Image (tube, rainbow, N blue to C red):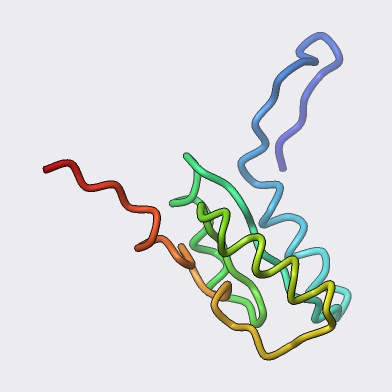
Amino acid sequence: METISKSDAGVYLNTSAGQNFLQYLRGRLFSAPVLIYTFSTIDMTQFVTNYDSAGSTICARICLGYINSLAAGLNSDSGWKGFKAGHEFDSVQIV
């Protein structure tokens, strides 16, 4: 677990926050769906493959779809599940 002192306060990237949160929920038998929305640290979210109803993405479209499905009470949406969900849609190809 990472710690930060008051003297180091300011901008801080906690790269294990998503994993810690997911472990906490699952350790208490909560099966709520969890989507980790990130960008440059996406490769550090492979841990989502170890959990049911978990995913990670850099794709805003995937994240908004996940939020809309939750708000509507839908549980049939699975496009957000898994490691790098929707990643192929955000790939930039320079020709």
